Length: 271
Length: 285
Image (cartoon, rainbow over all chains, first blue to last red):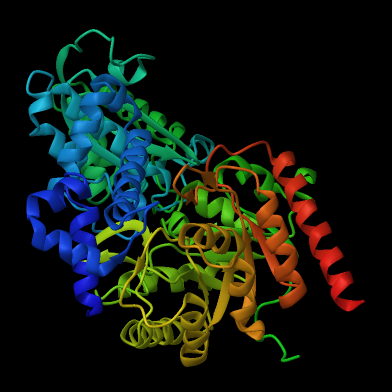
């Protein structure tokens, strides 16, 4: 028997949606004969039972990793529903990345279209928040601009300061208040979150992963900073629409001060 | 006695670096005194930044590091994953590990990953396939690697050689070393009914560059390699025999689940050192 044929048959059986026994039974006597010709079994552990060990390990290992990475979503769904979700997910989205951590990359999008969440659409957004937080853990590092270093800048340098975001951040829109749900000790028993469209910012400051909701204006500016860089003067100009110059400058200082204190600005922002 | 391969020093007793030990490893604090070296799962440190890389760089300042992978998929009929090898090479360039290891298994098919260590048939075809891939990996990494025997729960009827025969031929053809997992030998011996001591006797003495020690779960029908129990007496006995045969080899304690406090694992590490010293004393007597 060729190696490629062995691997194809083994893979098909141990990653099937159903148990190896059920898959073999569905395949008929020819499949059973082929399996027993391929795998050595004995009275203690017949061939199919030996393959079943691998099938169980495949599912349980991935299920447990996803349950850990999506702990809040799993708690909100309940154990049985989460088990069903993982079964469907593995059927539709086979792992492709060598790192186990990437197994769950597509789960939030999959969950958004899954029948389990038809009446609980916020669960996909909760999963997305959990995924975003996980991805920040080992995202790229950058030196950050501190509030102290900003305070030492001369006013003329401050005006031309280029503002750039650290790479370890992400922004995404949500339709529900999933931050409250995420904070809950028991997401399964938590009240239905309010419908309140917002943008969530997730980022890492040193080794701590953080998130918060941002208003529409801040979200727009964060997206501009993320896609390139913006000078402090441009920020003031942009914020000046509908505001006095003084109010725009105050808002710009407020935003930049907050971003710096939160570790969101890169230190290599050229002045 | 033939000399052991160069590049695999007798580092003493090491421990798998897991999150509960990150801070102690990073600071080199007193509780890690019995830990002579750390082994890390390579894939867990391939991210660009953040705490894992910070810890690894800091731990490296205090102890030697060994990179132990689970995703090279040396036995797969899928192409080798060049992007994975690039990331591994970059990690190795930064960390300068004592050595790099992975498993004699396959874990991918048709572009999909199993995240498990699946068994190979021990045939001439599989041997030629794995040996060529190990040679390519070694060329890419610019160093000899260690290949580990896995715990298995089935064997293939069309195998034409035993596992030690396969391992021996692999090390010769690919010019690689062996990471001999004592617990895996014990588990597989039970599951397939072979003699674990005879397995050790059949492995080439000069090719063994590292040992693994771990615990397993005893089920009614088989043993399961879980790394979530203390090492059992049978594995300690086998380890004693392995040290007598292979000499002073770097030994690593693996614990991946139900991880006890560091001092409990350090007690097991100290026991490993005592067993090794006693076995070496007896062997030299």
